[in-house]
Image (tube, rainbow, N blue to C red; front, side):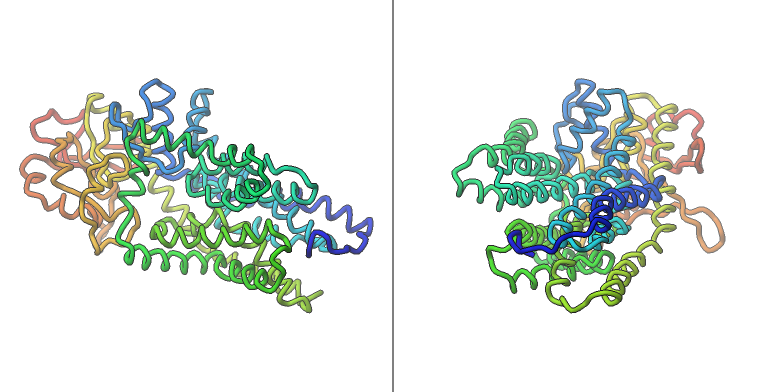
Length: 509
């Protein structure tokens, strides 16, 4: 519906329900996210916490003291965590609370955007699809600023839309997109059509607000880290065709979980059938969301399930998908329309079947790694170097020097050739010679986990990126296999340098 299209009067009953609906759907979204409490935050979120803590304590933006490597890809999120730590709060609590509130705000905002275009609709179907999305709910607990980024983008679109309808300058929308681009730099894509619109009107404040945060961070990045992009981007990037294949697979998997491609396709088809000057805000949002999706394909996607990299555009995709469906099939009304919504909700809920897997994966990972960090720090000297792959929780709990075997916090692993046999994004480069050259006192293989063999015996199993390290002759000659009891968990098996006294309480395996 165009902003100038005549609208039928809204009955008093519909008016009351219409006013209540955004609040109701926001409450349901928050409650849905709360059902995933205990599923996060993830280890990568703890990497940002470690940088934030060092910044607050005066050591600079570093993971290991003295080493300037940008090992985080969400600078705004890291700075927010630093502010939380400065206030004496735990950043994990901040991450969860802000993300849950952001999810509620997204559902509220999508309801408002829908109601402006369908004032006679009492139920705001796309907002319910957002609130019921397991992807958005789970990522609200996982952390990494993913859902807050989606909230900033969605709210910015709503503010731009409101400004156009009231004839005001969209300063708030520009400022929100500036913050979003600081949170994750690729979010600057959403600012481009708004900035272009403002420049054409010869207004300069909005573009300044949209671009200043990212420009400031980029200048700082070059001066402080000496790089154009974070090392996390470099170490994960593969050749164009490999990333294209992985990205398309990720898009297919994410769409099977969220309906993203179908929603965007419906929105694009509907836009193509309407006048170019009709609903320019959502037209721009749809086109930029599509470009954003193509960018994610270009970088090769991600390894987290439920489409993490697509979460920032998922709420808008569901909105324009519903608008597109309504525009393409205006004859679908009454029970047929209810049936279509129920079918869409049912499709989303298939992913609730992942709950047990997601919970058990988290339960065996982050709490285990934190317990490892606490216990190892109690048993070894404070200058001990520990080489391992899951670095976030361990570093946060131990404060020990960490040799990052996957290269998210050093520049060495990015120089290694990728292993074509590894398809887990971000785990495709390794260098056993470099790891051993750092002479770590402790090396943790297999992310500190035990597997159980067919005889029921515990078994240390190397990850695919650790095979060359486990088979390296220097590991056998210079290290001895030990184990250490971990309070609240099972023992840790690790390799310890032979020329260094054993940790307190350690024993041979």
